[in-house]
Image (cartoon, rainbow, N blue to C red; front, top):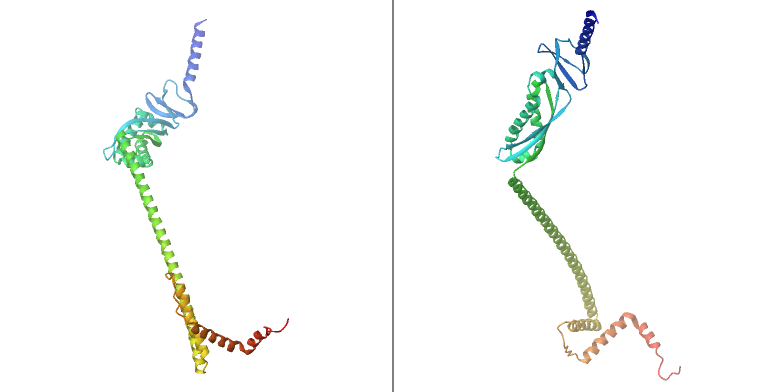
Length: 321
């Protein structure tokens, strides 16, 4: 080969290498920074890009997708001097490749350190009970503070989540005893409330029963009074009739009235539960006289016709059938 051929081959290789050096293919989800003589000039987007060979070079290859970093465990002292162990996780995304490359030296380390510092600041201003029960509030405050802090780095923090909050063993045991005491207290309160309601219902039932019983006694007394009133009216009417009969000279009616009272008195005396032996000092003639008076009243009431009819139904002695 002559010298010209060698020169042509070398020139061709240089051209090919120059073209290769000037063409850059950026994958999806990444952004490359371009530096000219060590100074940032522009960023390459995903796809085919051209740069000036030998003058420009690729500086940083920045991941533009959302990324997750673990926040390591650390001890935090709460406002009430309780020491707890906390860890978490953060999700962030780079939206400006130049700032993420040249505004901070180590983006992941800076984000982790900043998050850990703010975790201590936020939880250190809260009591242990608030830390354990307000995790969403802690996450929200951490996100707001950390996102504002990393904004100059071209980074957007999307979420910060506290994974585990581990109190000391003695605090866990104390909280378990407290929870048990609270549950026992609630159970005692519910039992007392149930007993109270039961007593109230029983008292209400007894009250209603007494009211109904009183109303029943009142109604019975009213009925008894009404019955006694009617009986008194009947007695008064009977006494009036006897008085009229006596005034007319009808002594039989008076005898019947006296005999009836006499027999009722002895009947009540015989019905007494304490009465074992009953002495009746009654003369036979008095009883017969009372019965005769009753017969006279019956005759006056039903008339002679009834007496005659009863006599006619009896055949005379000596008559053959």
